Structures are given as structure tokens and as C-alpha cells.
Image 1 (cartoon, rainbow, N blue to C red):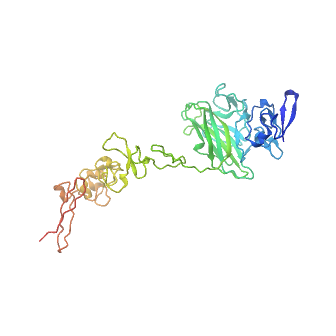
Image 2 (image 1 turned 90 degrees about the vertical axis):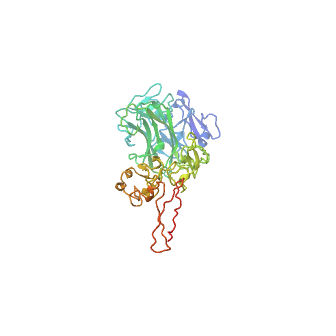
Image 3 (image 1 turned 30 degrees about the horizontal axis):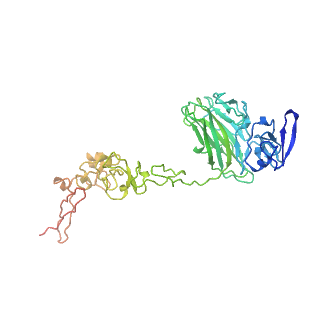
Length: 494
């Protein structure tokens, strides 16, 4: 059974016993509700008077406790004695009850006192973190976005009217470019904490005009001195002249195991964004509604089932979903088309939109609008020695030669990708061997040239019926589709 003290002004106090099944007479929160429901919401102490180390629930002070939230924010519950005792400088993580802080202990005074476990500082340098032991537990001034605007250079107790909903924060100046709000956490003595689920809001009480902008970035530490950046999901940025009032981080997972009985320190660093060290023209930012709970990494389930053609392919887990556009669907890039298809222009109508068509650029056949096998045209540009029709058919740095096919032992009229300097002197850039930039035929001349530049070079055919027979050669004709005709060569009759 619990007891509460019902305050009756200067006439003193009367003890009222409240059994679990009796609700009437116990203020807004009964013992039954406190033992079985969500944590209580602390209300203004003005309804209760001075409750000391106990919390005010509804309109009465608690006289005993079962959980920390039945004590004042500067106290904790000794569950063996069921009494509130002064809180240590840290907050113990509980598997079943998260740490929830609205910074009501700050009140509305200039020198507001932070709740147990929290400390604050300001630093001269940009992105500069201090130490937990070197920080303080009180603010320097109170400010409001409406009635009492902040001025540069202070650690602030921010709030707009409600003395139970406050936000510690800063407005930097040319003399100090960053500040830190620290939280000292301790794992229970009998259990490891697998990770933390963190939520908090960043509130803006005055807009800044610093062109670099300001941000609040979370860090963690094992000793309260050496700090590690917690990552971009814990970064809240305000660009220059950003007028947003509040930005939230919601249930972000900090993947850091805290061994049983060990400490973990958090630091919310307020600073001009990287790239500048000037703290002037700063926004006034405060941190509020901090929630710290046990968390475990939940496997991310890719969101691909509902993807339609044209949707972003991000699967929500850092990966990419399969392309959703089928043959004939409109597209802008190849990645939107399903496997085996590519985003293709309508060459008969340049004004028509691009659509997904069979990917001819990787089938090992010269087809479509390719200038050579799987290159040129709409496909990837061609390398040295590949056939081209225009400069765009060749990779950057190469030229589509004119009448240089013979340099690669093909018909002279066939155009080949090669170095620009090859047109002046094939031997200077290199020729005469497989893979040379100017071809394997340094003279770039074949006997057929004088007859027709569209005929293929002569190919010898050895007559084996008679000894000492001389090779016979002829020139084949190139057909309209530029494929070589078969070479007609017969032994010479004698």
C-alpha cells in the first residue's frame, strides 16, 4: 500500500492511506495506476508545493516510490527501501522503462538546473567537444522565441511559457563556435545493454544567417573524454536562414553494446557546420524531449514488392530493388529497365520518348544501330580497331578515321577508331603489331586500293595439287551491309 501527502495549505498535512483497489482520494494518479501502467507525467510543483525528492503526481506528492519516475528528476527510487534518494551523476538504463527527459528541472529561471545525468558546456572551437567532468549543470540565461529572444554567446534555458517543458541549448558567437549537452549512462549491474534507441527534438528559438549553417551531431564515448561520431542519422542540420522550428530524430539505433555495470557517455554537439570556424550569425538551438531506451538492431526488410516502373529503386535498407520497367515501358536510364533490357531511343522518331527494349549492346552480335559488335551507336563507344561511323562511336581520346580500314587489314573505305595522330603518321604512334594504336598494316595500303577502296584485301589461297604452285589471290566485294563476301579463288589450270 502506498501513502500520499495531501497538501492542505498552511493548516498542515494529512496522511491518507490508499489501498490498491481504492482510487478516490489519491489525486490524479492512484497507486493502482502507478504500479501497472505507463510512467506518470510530472506536473507543475505549484499544484503540490515542495515535494522534496518525491514527484508531484496530479495534485499530491508521493511519499514512497516503486520506480524512478515517482521521484523528482533530481532523485531516484531506492526500490529496497521504497524511498527517493538523491540521484547519482548518471542515469541507469532500465530494460523496461526508458529514460524520458523534458528538462522540467530547468524551470524558467536564468540559472536552471539540469536533470541528473545531464551536464552542458560551450567551446571556443568549431566541432569541439569537451569532457563530462569539465561541464556544468546550470544554464547561463533563460530565453524564449517570443517574449525573450536570445542574444549571442550563452548557454540557454529555452522555453515558451510552460515551465515544465524546457530545452537546454546555445546561441553561438564569434567567441564560441560550439557547445555540448552530455548524458552519462550506466548499464545495470546484472545485464548488458545491446544498444540504444534514441529520440529527441532540436528546437530553433532564433534563426541564424551564417551561410555555412549549424548542426547538432551526436557523439559517444566510453570515458567522457574521447569521442566518436555516431553517424549521419544522428545529425540535425539548419542551413543559413533555415526557418524550421523543430526537427526530430526518431527511434534511431545506436549500435553500441554497454557491458553490465559499464558507462556510456553521449554528447550532442552544437556547432557551425564543417567548413567554417566562425560562430557568429548563429541560430539559437535547444534539445528537448530526449528518450533513451534499450534497443536491438531490427533486421531491415527491403521494400521492393510495391515498386512500379518509374519509382526510385532504393529498397529502404541501403540496397537497390530490381528494375521494375518492362519492355515497352517509358524510361530515362538503363537501370530502370528489367534484366536483359536497356533504355532505348526511337531512332525513327527523335521526338518520341525512350522506352525499355531488348539490350542489343551485350549480345555478342552486330545489330541494331551498332557500328561494331556491341559498341558504337547507342551502345558504349568503341575502342581502337573497332568500326565506327562517327566520332561519337569511339571512346574519348580516339577519332573515327577516314579510309583507314586497310591499316587494320580490312577494306580501305571501312572507318576505324584510332588515335588522331595516326592520320598523320602511323609509325609515330605505333603500328605493325596486334593491339597497336594505328593498326597492324603500317602502310595502310593493299593491292585492291587502286581498284576500289570498298574491296577487301587480297587473301592468298595455296594450291596443293601441284608442288611449287604459287598462291593465287583475288579481291572480294563488300556487300551493302559491309560484310565480306566470300573470296572466289581457284587453282590455276595448266
